[in-house]
Structures are given as C-alpha cells and as structure tokens.
Length: 250
Ligand code: SAH
Image 1 (cartoon, helix red, strand yellow):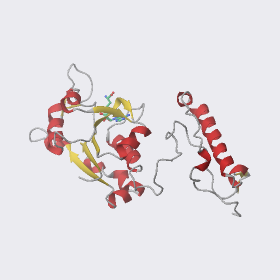
Image 2: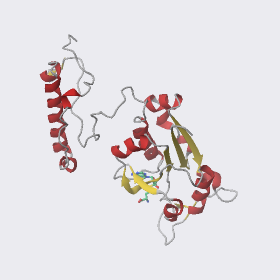
Image 3: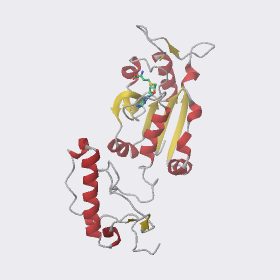
Image 4: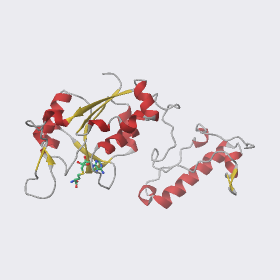
C-alpha cells in the first residue's frame, strides 16, 4: 500500500473517521494522501454474544479486554511482518510528541488499538509487539478520541497535506519553543494594536521579535521546555514570512 495508511482496531468502529473526515485530514483522505482501515474487535468476540472482555484477575472493578480476542483481531487485520509501528492507546503510555508525529508522517503508517473499560490484558503488549502511548495525563473513557488526536497530528504533516511544504515550520513544539503571538486585521481592535514591528516590513526585526516572544512564552508557561531552549538559528531572518500583514487600512 502506497502512502500513509492507518489501521485502527476498536470496539466502536462507528466513531471513525469521526473528526478525521472534516477539514484538512478529510480533504487529504479524499485526495488519497492517507488511508484508513477500521476493524471491529467484536468481530472476533467469543460465542453467540461475541464477548470481548472478562473480569479482572485478582478482582476489582470493571472489565478487561481479553488478549486472545484482541490478538485474533490483530492477526486478521494485519500481516505479521507489517512494518508499521503498533501503538496501544493508554494513559500509562509514553506521551505522544510533535517530533514523533513528524517522524511518522513520512513513514508507512500506524496501527492503533483503542481500549475501553478498565483496559486490555497486559499480555497483548509482548504478545503482539505493541507500545503503550498516551495523549496526556488524564483518563478518557476509550482510546478512540486519543487515536484521532494522534492521527490528526500526523496527517497534517504528511507531505502535500498542508499548503506550504518543507520543514521550516515555526509552530509550537517544532523547535522546542511555543509559537510567538499571531495577529491579523484589523490593525486596531477594541483599543489593542498589532505590535508595531510586525507592520514595519523589516523581516530581520520581525524574526527577532518573534524569537524573543517565543522564548518569553516558553519560559513563562513551560519551564520544562525552557530548560532546553535551542539556540536561535543564524538564518532566522530568512525564514518564510507567514501571514505577513501589509500596513493595512482595515
Ligand atoms: N484503567 C486504565 C484506564 C482505562 S481508560 C488505567 O488506569 O490506566 C479506557 C481506555 O481509554 C484505555 O484502555 C485507553 O485505550 C484509553 N485512554 C484513556 N486515557 C487515555 C490517554 N490519556 N491516552 C490514550 N488513551 C487513553
């Protein structure tokens, strides 16, 4: 299969493509820049009721998705030598990052398993080579939204999906910095002006101001990132000016 292909295993297939059929990701899906296969884990459930879960060993609340049922779903959906990385949505996992999204965007795709209930039998991780991945330190009721968040972050970075290609994005988290403040017309709104420098046409001064603002915001909001602020690129002034505002009337 050419391009980026996502396979999602879920107990709620009707939740897909969900948000991913809208806007940027949806257009890209229609244009064939990525593809999505959604597999219902329940198709591999046991017995007449297609049971997929059971009570936790050792007791406790809730239900746990069975490893054998999930393995059958995985084995039916993907060949054993499928090169795509396999992720299990889990609040215990490593937190997904922009750097990882960028790396995956030029790869063959991803396989994502969405949990429900109390989670999934631990043995599937070693048994089918999954890695647990989280979208943040909070607990969702299921992995479907997490899978869509991860796919959305990746898809917008697939070459051809966004207008301006290339790797010189200045967005938050791309270079260990949060993004500088953005403005657009009108020039004055409720007494607040667009910072003068942005209307100056002086690209070097604009680049310097943006860099300073990005560093200030990162220090104020994210001390964890601020400790690792990378040195400013020497050629910052040559960066593609984004959404430049001419000294406008509006
Ligand atoms: N008992 C589990 C939570 C289960 S929540 C625990 O305490 O770790 C049910 C499912 O929602 C999980 O199996 C997982 O697939 C998904 N989920 C919940 N929070 C998530 C998060 N922050 N990131 C990714 N997936 C999450």
